[in-house]
Length: 343
Length: 230
Image (cartoon, rainbow over all chains, first blue to last red):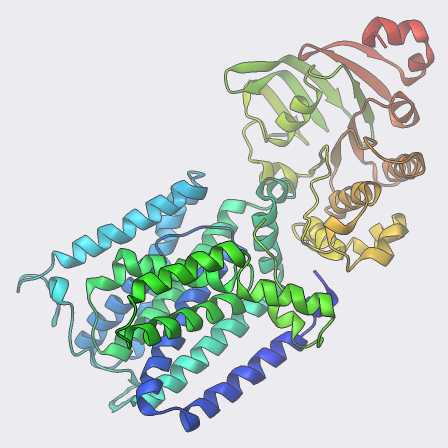
C-alpha cells in the first residue's frame, strides 16, 4: 500500500494512545464503569479476531463466538482442576486454535467458501450451544469441574501469577491485563500483516486464484489465519470467564455470534482499529439504552444499525480514514485508519 | 521442458480441448494462434492447473504435473500472465512484485526486474489499481518473472496496450529468452508480435492443433488465410 502504511508511524501512535488510555482511564472513571470497560476491552479482543479473519482473510465466519466459548470453557475446566491458572491460560488459546484448525482444514481443503462457510460455522456454534446446554447433571463432570448445562460453571477461579495460585488477579489487575492483551494483539496483528505472511493473506483475499498461480497454497494460508483468529478469540474467552467468574452456553448463542459481526460491520472491515471502535461504540450504546426505560433498547439499537449499514456502509473507521486522506490530515493519524478493504 | 500428450479438458461437461500434443525445449518460444473460442486460453488454464485435465498427461521438467495444484505447478517453475493481468489492485506495485518472488527464496529479483522495466521505479508505492493498462501489463509480467519461472504462459499480452509498450515487452521477452533460457508459450492475436518472438507457431482449431508453421510464414497471406481466415 502506501509508504505510510509500511512505516511505523501509525503503529507507534496506536501503541502510545492505547497505553495512555490504559493508564488514564482507571483514574478518571468510576468503579462501576471500570467493570463495564473491562468487558468492552475483552470483547474488543474478540472483535479483533474476527477483524483479522474477515477483514483481512476474507473469511466470513458466523461462528467466532464458538472459539470464544471454547476458550472460556477450556480455561474454566482446566483451572478448576489444576488450581494454578498458567496451563489453563495456555489451554484457552491452544484448544480453540486447534479446534479452528481442525474445522478449517475440512472446510478450506474441501473448498467451501463464502456463505456456505458462514452457515457451517454458525451451525457448529449452535451445536456447541445445544451440547453444552445438555450437560446438566452430576454425570457431566470433567475432573472436579461440573459442566452445569445451561446453568454453566460458577465461581471460576481467577488468573493468578504463574505458579502462585494464592496471588490471584484483582479486578483492576484484570483491566490492565485485558488492556495490555488488547494492545499486544493489535500490535502483533499489525506486525503480522506487514510481514510476508500477512501480505500473502491480503493478496489471497484480493484474488485467491492469482495468488495460487504465483505459488501460494491459499488453503494453507486461510487455515493458518483462521486458526490464529480462533486462538485470539479463545484468549478473549478466558478473560471473559475471569471477568464474570462464570461461564455458560450463552457464549455460543446466536446473539453472541451476531453481535461480533455487527461490531466489525459498524467499525469497518479491512482495518484493525475498526472492530475495536465498533465494539466499544455498540456496547456503550447498548449499556446506555439498557439503563433507561423510555425507549425499547433493541428497537433503538436496531435502528442505529440499519442507519449505519445504509449511511456508512464502509464502517466508521474506513469512512474517517477516507476523509483524513482527502484532507491529507496528520500523517500519524491517517495510517491508523489505513485499510485494505474487502473487495 | 514441457511435454503434453493427448490433453483433454473442458468446463464441466463441455469438452474444449480434444487431444492436444506438443513438446517444448528450454528457451523456446511457441506462439499459439487461433480464432476466439478455439481453446487457446483453455489450454493455458489447463497447463497451469486452473482447469482439470480430463484425459492425457502433462510432464514438466521430467515431472508429471497432470494433477498437481496450481500452486505446485507455479513452484515447479510455470508462470502465467493471464488476460486482464490480474494484478492485486489494493497492493502497491512493490507489494505486487514481492508477491511474485516470495516463493522463490534467495536473493531478491526485484532490482533486476526494475532494471528491465524502469517505468515501474517511479510507481513502487502506487496501488495496482492506479496504474494504466500498459503499466499493469508490465507489472504483471515483472511480477511473474520475479519468481524466476522456467516457462511462462502469456495470454494476449498486447491486448489493449499502446504500441510502444508492446515493443518494450517484445524486446524484454526476447532478451530474457536469450539470457535466462526462458521458455514462453504465447497466445496472441497480434501476428506482428508473434512474428517478433516466436520460434514456431501452432495453429489451434476446435480444441486441437491442426498445423505448425514458422513465424516467417505469417508474412504469407495465403498461409494466414488458409489457417486463420483473416
